[in-house]
Length: 227
Image 1 (cartoon, rainbow, N blue to C red):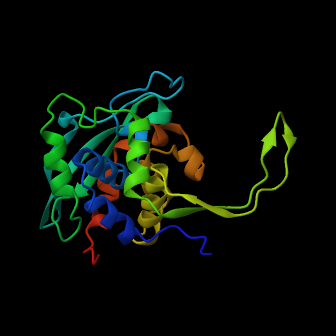
Image 2: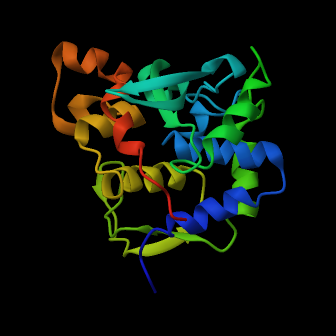
């Protein structure tokens, strides 16, 4: 039994071949943005007590030109509202050229058509239902851990595999950004919405504004994809 994340290419293909458009682009966005599902969907289920739906609208996607010396690259900047930081905005910049990221153009076109409305006007529970269908048969690893109840330790749970669910897309993308695109801790915290304090122990004003500095990591995304 292999206790490893599924191959990125396998997951991307599952997303690409999804028959329900809203599900396809929902998971495309969650993966590309290294996001939590609550940062993508626009409706909160009545049973959610602590989780807010902070999903993107059509106005949250803007096309720009990124200039680096004499080079120019078309890009799209998406505004994401970070779930665990009170809706604090962060910017996700993605290359528009298909050689660098084949998903960007179709996702941009899908999101933009909604204008001021939510691009994914459904709950995270509905997204979970979609994920069971699209990622059926895929697994993700759980490391060995010891659970606690009422402050008391329970028996150790050995490493095992669980069915692939939406939050795995965030882990998959973070791993890809580190291993394939050579992101460092600061760049990953900017991209994924982690605080610099939690990621690398940095505080002060740098942590306050780092979420806006997408230009720091964007050049690293200018690599040809081979999948």
